[in-house]
Length: 319
Image (cartoon, rainbow, N blue to C red; front, top):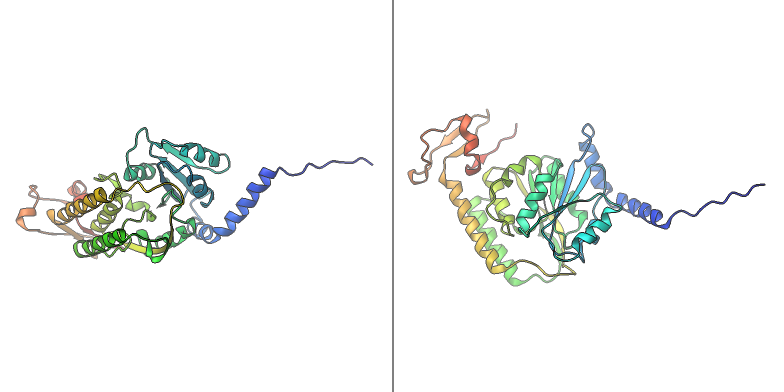
């Protein structure tokens, strides 16, 4: 009788298969939700964008913990890191599909997000930080209101959820002040307005043209532009953890100046030109603003609205 020897399975392959099983169980609800909405359309449905600058000690763990599925793409935008962040991403690329896009020079947080959006293929786009403060478990919480057509744009909030570190008094005070300004000037109440963990559907991409702030004020600018253009915004509860490695790149004084200049700029934009609103029949009504804020153009027709769209306050109606 001939003896047949059987090789033991490769340990690395077994480990990867085991990790895939854990990944499937962990994100079962997310995968199930995506499969329900993409029954007819194949390909990428969800894009996850991570801006990265000098996060060599955290980025691999973050990428390992992200969901992996044929309908999901992961995009890392390297904002000209000077440490070994790229090497850590390439380690993950050996067993997980990751799109790595490099900036030839450091351009800032907002610019990295914009680059990711430019290359994203998904119908829904999620942005999250690469420092390990956000947990991928909350992705389903952010995208569910969008899938249910209850919101166009969602923002993760530690105040509606929970956070596991000591929050500086200056940070909380600053967010409260900013919350009140946004509520008064734009009629939107956003408690955690600087959180980078967000989701939006593809039609919201229109707000990402002609941005003025490349740094962290970019987070506030998104909210103001989405508000001005009439998109439905919702805060969702998330968990937020303290970063284990590295330091924050935020300079509070500069951020405060940029945020409040951003508020001033977009409030002027809100009132500077004509106010346009859509009625139930889909027709556009034009309301005149005070003379001092009227544009020089004497008449605006439906055909020329696209030239002014980013400056108008448009109330969107859904039929």
